[in-house]
Image (cartoon, rainbow, N blue to C red):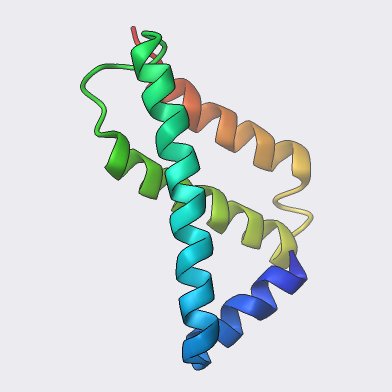
Length: 95
């Protein structure tokens, strides 16, 4: 995660890194979107969910939690990070 954070810093300062970062983030969001669409088709999540918006939200949420795990490992150990993501995903489940 420290390498990723250093890369993010460089992406903020250098256009070539920013372009690569945008491609990586877009790729992750597309994977998340596809998984959400699959879950929607299977009836596992609500049909009302905007999967484009939710993919961005989930990427931002999980990325932030990962960074907090590096900066504050006692407050955000791996088990807590996993629980937070699981809790978020549980809220998407179809009722």
